[in-house]
Image (cartoon, rainbow, N blue to C red; front, top):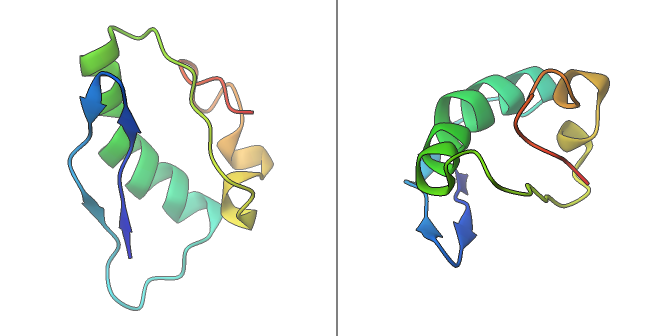
Length: 75
């Protein structure tokens, strides 16, 4: 699986999920967001962004909500 963020400012680097990895909220928040997408998003937007994602179960758990991601407003 691959994840990428795209906006009018550009795109992030591709974030590859390890083959066979279980995508739960801990893995998603740490490996995909915190270590992958968010550093690129923050760099290109100067921390001025609105982060939206689909309704996948790993995206909407208490672990992935504020304040775990203090600069991302997740809707």
